[in-house]
Length: 116
Image (cartoon, rainbow, N blue to C red; front, side):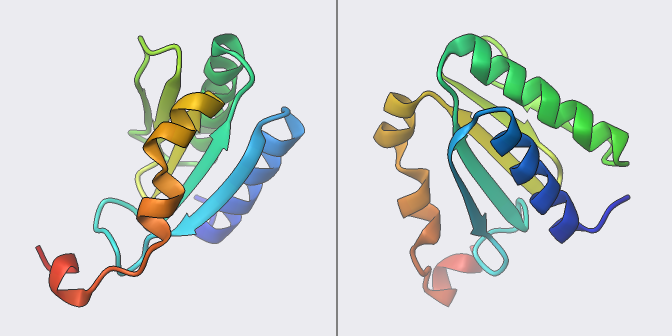
């Protein structure tokens, strides 16, 4: 399996080369136990969002990340690719603005709240 830092870099490149918009990477280390890194990107349509999520899933599987999966398969506005230590959200721009994940996860979290 590729290193987590290299996987993150390659997935960002994959998303960028496939015309994903506004790609952001957030370090979750010390903020959450669910993953070490999060990538957030936007797609231009429901088909684009679906295609991006499938490409990311295939890339993860080809690079030794087993048990990865896509959440939100029935949603037209959002997909989450669970890459174990790397979470990838792909939104339509309106839903992304509504949920503001970048704002929520980029803020510093007091240590008392991290140890829940």
